[in-house]
Length: 404
Ligand code: ADP
Ligand code: MG
Image 1 (cartoon, rainbow, N blue to C red):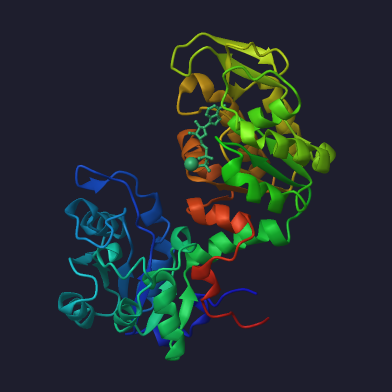
Image 2: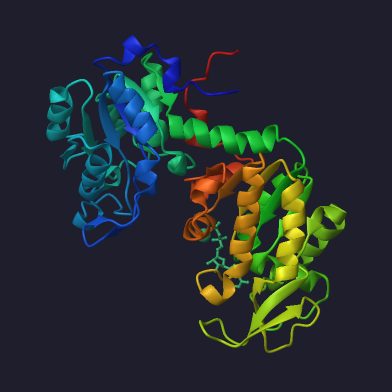
């Protein structure tokens, strides 16, 4: 069932209305300014739609973990300033969440104007999903919009509590355009993928992603596994993994998965091995059965990239989560970059390609290929939970769309 979106609201409903938008402006702040504005830019389509239609837009987000206390280093002020630069319009910032200052600022807001409230986690009631805070937030709004996919796995006052209050009083609780886009791409891949559907998983650990593997395995045609995650599978095959990162307590599970999945799981055939995980270390390119006891596997090798590319080239839907190696160090980034290029090439040939996971998104960005894939998910933890097949509370609570 799809959720009601802001385009499903009659435009004259928006004109002059106070629209409270939960955004995910949990951005890195360095020396008092926004170091990476990806998450802010991702909300611009929603904000443009709302302001173009004459809404009075009130933005609320969390930033960091202030644990219910005011922390100047976690203020939303830099995010508001960056937003003003991006839309080239004044954006008002009010250093208050639901108090008199916030209410005054919202009352004075004119159609088409935007105000950013202070960090909602300065309020202890946010993470406790406190009723009082939810009602105070709802009192600032005629319409609620959730555009914070990255926070939708948390049942907090600004994500679920406020939506509940809105619905109970007959006011709309809708999905923003970014939220819709995330659900369309991630949900489409899970529920109705064009085939062949290939998933690529990597990163540091199996343990954190076991539920993702379980949920994806019956849905995909091929599951390509790289990164340190592959090491645990190597061990399950009885291979020497030297000093590589291995989750010893998951070897048995990896063994079971391999038996169950048969040919569906594709593992690297070669790897980049080094004595130390540091830049400029001496490296060896070895077959996966040639790793010495003193070596660490830090990237997939070129034969593996070529194998993965074969599967990727034939796929119509590709979902990628988790880097292929210790990509933060250039010496071990080639596997990840090679896979990123293959995914970008498949996109150019018409495949639907989705990248999820904070580190994977950073790697694709660093390779300059973020615009060359269909969708880069803005939700780290939220996209993982979604891929595990778990309902996200911040999504579940929103109004259903009209059946069509
Ligand atoms: P994402 O954030 O995209 O979900 P993860 O957080 O699961 O990804 O994993 C990313 C981390 O895994 C990166 O820091 C990367 O360096 C590490 N990693 C991947 N492969 C290896 C490897 N072979 N050895 C050590 N670390 C690895
Ligand atoms: Mg990560």
